[in-house]
Image: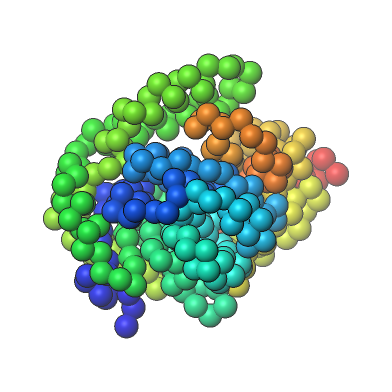
Length: 349
């Protein structure tokens, strides 16, 4: 029986971020620090703060963008204030160290939350992601494996009675959530793409206490029903995403200046990722956008918007080179993207 089939062990939430808040708010952790990868989405960090804890960022593996077990042992286990860690399976790529990380967390009484927001249906070592942590969160928001446009899922091996009680006290979703999220996203991108300015920390600090409605809300019965219906499509969606990954790989090949992202066996790709020489990446983005081809460069280090000035070398190196492309797409759309990349690379050989 899949854990999704156990009613008391699952809770549909406003979004994945809401699920994180519910877990942290209903636990009395032994420490105040909640560790997260430096390249995690900002939506996973705000609920840590709203639950009364302090987010602490960790540098990532330079090849996969995931957290390494050794780094966690070296940093987190020396911190007497470490209460929890959120381990994300970034880009739908399962964290190859997750079992070792889970063992370390259990030995040190550190709560482990698996962030499978972009990895629903993925597996590692023959086991589904989400089966290693004390809690697991999924997202059914925009561009996620199951894309409903909103919503999240909280699951655990133990019944979620306290989390469900707290969730029932949250305000119900309104369209203002989408309006605020759209505005915030545009502002974030504008600030992120304007590195010469120095006022962004003040902007983010000033609005931090006014964003609760973007992250902490519950769904209507209609929305819950829509998510429950959509989840049934997961096996077909997983097959489609993996097929698109194979098409990207076949059509792109290995052009000069490009390195393919190392997807693990069992990955369910969030998007198709490649690495491009840092000095050429900006030019390639311009070429693709001029051809009206979709491209993005997620995820950068999120630490600066929370006032953290620490340097994360692997995260910076990783985020300076990564590009990602939508999945799913039609075979023609994939071919157009890959052809444009190959032409660009050939012109810079």
